[in-house]
Amino acid sequence: MIRYGMAQWQHPAWVNWLYPASLPAAERIGRYSQVFSTVEVGSTFYTKVDDAQLLRWYESVGEDFKFSFKAPQTVTHRLLERPWRDVQQDWLAFMLSLQPLQTKLGPIMLQFPAICDERALARILALCDMWTLSAPLSVEVRNLAYFDKSEVESRFLSALSVRGVNRVVMDSRPVFSTDAYCESLVDAQKKKPRVPCHPVATAGHPVVRFIGHPDLPRNEVWLDQWAAKLSQWLSEGLLPSVFVHSSDNIAAPTLAGQLDEKVRALTPNDQSALALPQSQEQASLW
Image (cartoon, rainbow, N blue to C red; front, top):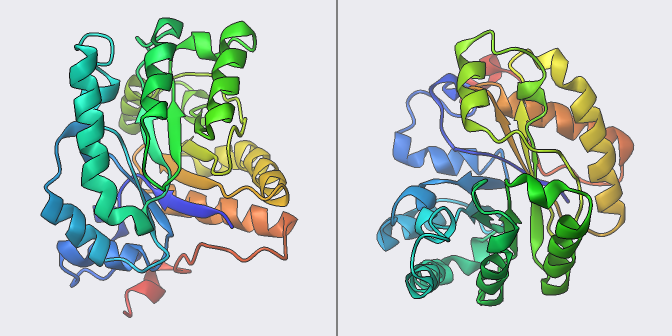
């Protein structure tokens, strides 16, 4: 099956749709987990999340839900500037903090910035070799050398494949398909990487990060492409995780629902993992 998720589990625009306004903020993750089967957690990238908080999140969702945590920025974004021993220690500490959560872990993400070019590959792979948890591991790179369709990318993909590590496929094409004519597009084009979209699966749990355009019909062409690719991966026995964003994330659940409909049209025998409320009016009756 495909696991669909967002980059967050609560948003003001989702009130009275994904969850009622009366639901306390601390309980929204539980309601979110009844709709989506995974979530991309960026808070662990920015700071050390308290073990007790991690456990509360873990206990708030069902047994089949999966968290995809991002590795700390001290490991990824400061990979080249910090002493290697310090990077290793932070990576080991992060893994240790996730050990109690292993039954509800999806692909964990090592997300490297554009400054990490091919010279960083040895360290990236060394971090992969240190991975000891049962959950899948995934790697996102943003330096264009890893998208050259030549020696560097081939070496990178081969190394991930040998290790059973998934490549994160970033698709930011939608938000760069027009000029930034609104605030959310200005922000998205400033923050999201503009990298080629190479939908290559290097292991059994491919990860897709789709950044949708706020003009929803404009996304159709890319949603069609992803429906075809996801259907292919399903036929090959792969288990994709798809994290749907939009420039302001308001429409991200809607885009996920549209993608799921397209996938189900191509693979009618596969059970959908997405249970999106049909309307805000219906959700408000909860």
